[in-house]
Amino acid sequence: MLEKESIHSFKDLSKATAKKLKEILDAAGSKFAMHNPKSWPKQAKLAAAEKWEELKALQDELIGGK
Image (cartoon, rainbow, N blue to C red; front, side, top):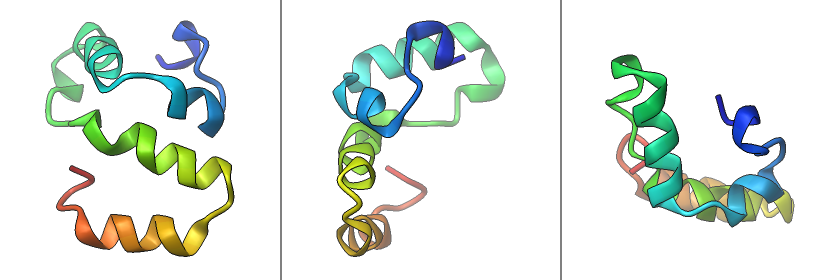
């Protein structure tokens, strides 16, 4: 589903807005309704920069990726 919106890498994902990601999830159907992409761009930015320790620390702070 992300590929259809030209999101193919962490770098692409890091440039997406949470609002746009939520629209993509909503359009994909109810099985994706539980996901909250608010932190996805920030996490993707860290992953794209290979800042694995910072990413892990952020993920440890998040509850269910939110």
